[in-house]
Image (tube, rainbow, N blue to C red; front, side, top):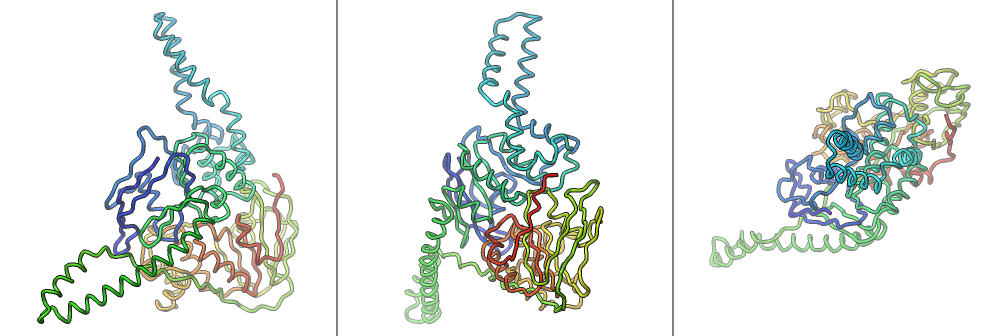
Length: 509
């Protein structure tokens, strides 16, 4: 279904992949993994034709129908949700129009071939999903949590996360031969992720999925493609099996790399010593041999994350109280919320996508006015907030410039140190924000959080884009934080080891 042949891609001095080849076969369910910045999103862009590789080629079978989850695709905002989903059957609507036109023409000139053509098109519609379209749309909209938004709601009224779900739903209705999904769970809650897992398990086609959600990947994959050391390695089995094989192969690779480096250094020393002496012929011969060596790519030097949030001491019993708090925009999203959080508690907030988790956080932060009721933080509360939106006022700034604007008194050395502690190497700290991967942009935001002293952390989907090393380190860091924490995350596996209780916003609107 997809063949990458001798593909190479480099940005500046950074080699993403070098002369890599890999094949995805019919009906394989493939997960694409790798550290933040390894080149997962770039590989997706090469596969979808958005980016041409420096070298190599991408090949598909003739007439392959590809579906790509592009969260930034332009849509007609005047359409409502149902009409947008019905547009997945655009080809069938064209056939229905053709049939009507053929019968109209037959009424004027009764020629047999017009009836035959209309009959062929009608058979195609009968054998497809055209006449079950609305049932399929309703089932899918229900499964992905779209129906609660109102099927007649215009697209202009949807948030970015709601629109992403809608684009995913349309693509699934189109039933492509090859699905390309980049972080499909980012805007889904637990129930809708489970629905998507079951859908993909039953999907008869082929797909390639990028996701940092290990539980999700483990249940939907039959093969894993891993990007590391500038190479693509394909493993048979789900994520758990692939990671065990990868660990064994990494140990072997590192031994090979170290042995090759030792051989290169020894040979270079011999050449330097004897190039101008009596053994110059032998030295030149070894120099030629050294030039022909297929050098192994050095192991990644990406810094390991070492997150630490600075604590601002506070003396209090309660961290937050709400009384009759009603949240929403033009209308309430939930009934009044009466909430008491003790100081030092670690709370997870759960609920289906769109119910108001982010709206609640933004209301507590004062970004959105409450419709009714009150909320209260004690004096000297210092809040540090992580927003799930990767939006930048100046996307052409690099991470260093961004932090320097926020903290002009901090030295460049201190800013570099915080970015490195977040897992962003110096080279990427000087890369424009818009050109960083989602995980790398998240690390800039984590570095920003570490610059501020606080006693109340509020995190909205912090794991959406980050790799497993960063996720593990963030979890351990939050567990050690002495202050109060509210976290919203669709990954229970991430937070369940350190939270004290779950607050469920499970009320139907």
